[in-house]
Length: 175
Image (cartoon, rainbow, N blue to C red; front, top):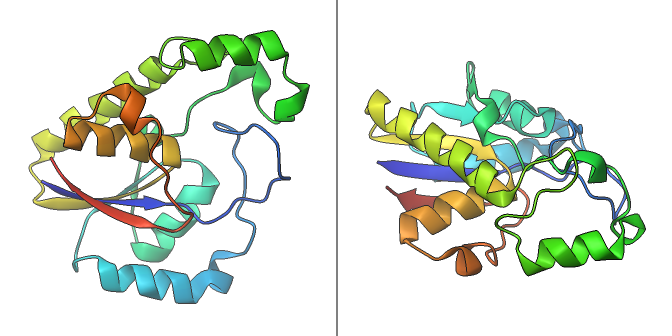
């Protein structure tokens, strides 16, 4: 199966804030990014099913690409719990150091670990394979794209966690 992973456009959020599961709107209205949507459409096969994170920064773009995208919370960005919408430099240094020492398993207070996020994303992929689509587009977040790209390329977590994706970028992977 071919997957077209699409990162949402920039969200409306101040620089330096931790956000993941927070439902942020887009920095610009989707209509204002019509040129970006038109460009995205040229990179996607016609009649492609579109799946999306339910967060509005993804769902707005998914709706611009497809009249009826399927929303699935398993495509949502990592939940940083108590860290959400706090400045990174206001988060206790000891907690950030613990996370940096074991990013796969450390869980921010009230949030989820990267391995928990990975499991829900892989659960989504398993369900998607049962639908037997030849290809699909996923409008999602950088964290989800890292997990799927790493899974498709059989990368260890230390490698896939270092991957970077620009806002609005499209990455094609084969599962």
